[in-house]
Length: 148
Image (cartoon, rainbow, N blue to C red; front, side, top):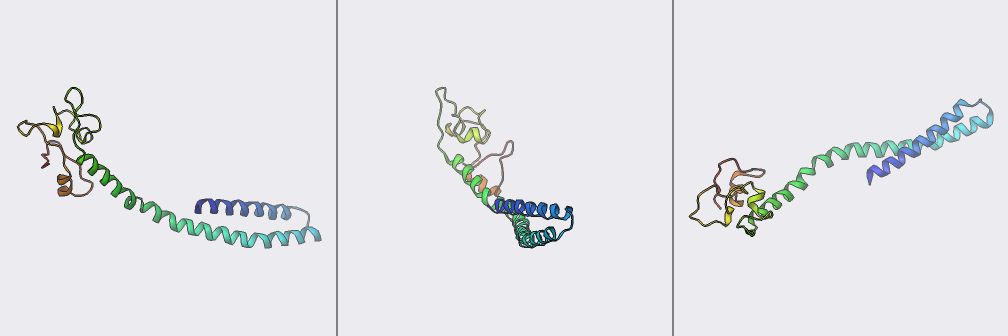
């Protein structure tokens, strides 16, 4: 919204600036000088408005850009936790289906992912508990054994 307002102010400023330049190029007669003076008077508040909106946008954009992580990081963490906590669903051949956490976390090559019996060997899936122990933004490493 602020970008749109700034863009509109810029268009108004350019339009009036072109009008002033047009009168400056004309022959300096009394009517032209009066119109030039009037155009300059119209230009002054429009230029101040544009400069204020431009300054505000230049001040706010870096803060807005830097705050993107504060907004998206919790969403991504919640998405990963939801995928890790999702119960395993086996397909027709006993393999985890595409929506299971094993596929998401890179354990699609195990016979049955977290749906296997406790007697089966192989890497354990990356769990929410493991993610909490490793800290935010952590990903499972090759050969890392989860505790879930």
